[in-house]
Image (cartoon, rainbow, N blue to C red; front, side, top):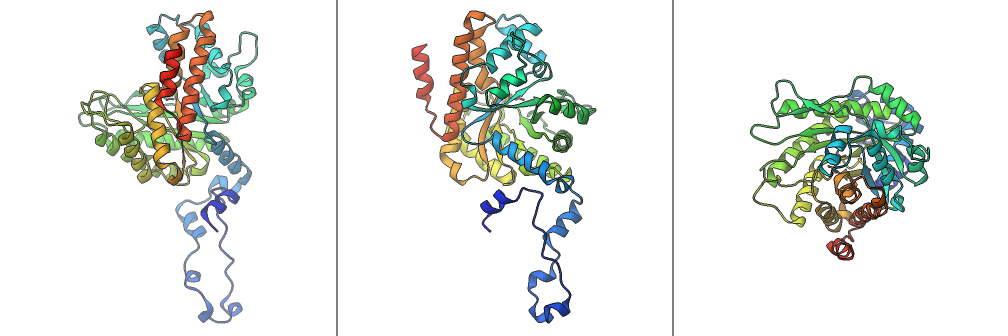
Length: 404
Ligand code: 13P
């Protein structure tokens, strides 16, 4: 059966069992046995290395995860990360003179989710613990507003990146304690997927093997817990842009981090068909004197991912990591223009700043600016949907700036 057909009819984790072995006497003679009959079945090898996959015994649950993961990267839509922690959100508000209060954060998130037409370009929205519990000013729960807009609600579940003991300059993401219970409660509230971000900094002597491995293991344990609880894990190992490193160095570290993450995902029995990978693009450091072209970044990123990301993963949804909205769209566009028809996974987006920043700068906490801010947000979401189709053009941004 061609790979495509097998994927459509059989969710991962449901490998067709090998034909039952029959006694030699029933076969006639050993002469009739094929070479493959002497080999252990694929099924028994998998079970020996990775026995009793929990999801094997729950095909309906596995199918739901696969369906949700595919929906998140279907067509030309992508994810909107609106899950900034309170301190991060407050820092962005402070720069623009917006009050750093629960009400200001609520009003801003209401602006985002009530943006007309958002569901045309956005498949899933990632919320944080504060936001998932909030309501619109008229009392409608945010979760209902999101679902009514045709968007799948998701939730950030990590507890943040903390200084890593004995590893100066490096971070380890925390949040595994009590995660099973928290996932159950978010699922009850309506979340269908979750996110966990690990950060890997580049610099003198870093990243260390210890940092990459500890973060990869935490990501894999989080992902396994998500799938057990029926939520699709968005697995985010972010190699940071800060620094003077070259594109080549970013490529090496990204490949190493991704290989380690997928090795751990296998060890922790995570079903690759029921997850989304959220990586960084392969970029030169912000302070690197050589800044490659859009096409060079697209080529380096796709080559790196092809070496490290299994084809069973349904989609890659990039983070923007501090790139401008225009550059993030242009680079995503170039990847789809140059490679889309030849890639095993969908190449999508899961941006926060690259979608939200212009809207935030227009809003600045003013009720009278809500409409204009929503137009800016919709515009960026639309540019990224175009980038998924490979039809984004910088002129889309130039035209808008001229009209503004
Ligand atoms: P940026 O797109 O701003 O990097 O944010 C993505 C994200 O969700 C970080 O966890």
